[in-house]
Length: 319
Image (tube, rainbow, N blue to C red):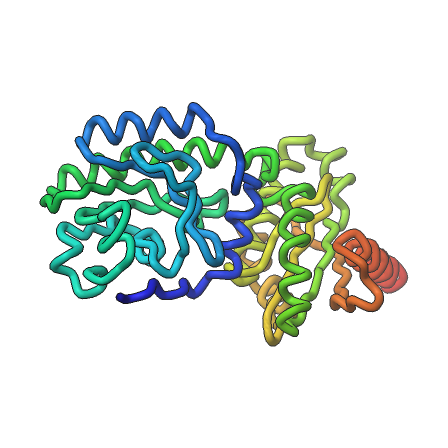
């Protein structure tokens, strides 16, 4: 049996999944509607919305299956989330990766599997919409496209569940979403001896820009700054608008490269300012997580906020 590989973005992928707070939740008609329609349309024994957690796959919706979860190491969906396309096994008995898999040799006696990734609020592959049958079958290209359409319906429902954690204007995490991710990330990094740095940003002269040019210009500045942060930092870094003109970035890893990212921000800002009616400037505070000093994300944000104001004060003295 071939166990599924771990995706290169596993840490952030799990954070995306956990931020939804959907694991182990009660069945919901909106998801059951999709799996019920897909099961009938494709004529399969089983249809699932499967969410791939650290060591298990858990079924948010299931048709034709009593189990609510199975180990990740035997899952077909663990393989399916490794690619942004359909994962199809037409006959598991003839596939050396799965022929001796306990889900094939025992209940639910999988012979055919087709899964398409479903995504968290940041686009990470957090699970699948999958079809399972006890008989081998072929799966045409048109059927792949139909399965993709059903998976997109699941994406829509997951996105609606995530809206409370996303800033409507900039489409990045809001304060609530940032805090939820931090509550998972900080203990994880502490256990694995990984550094964490929080950067706290405040736009310089934002009130004057709003007063002079109006809220539309202010909104454009906030959106431009959010894009600047996303371009300057790694995909694995958590970027959020905390409120008003305040933003935060959480960087985690064996070796955090905050200075290099900040230098990249200044370089990119020159390009953005060339196409933007007003200059984008900012003050920033940087704090490294110390579990002896910080008891959670609120302590980190408080210290980073203080460092940001010190940076802003220094700039005013130099002006």
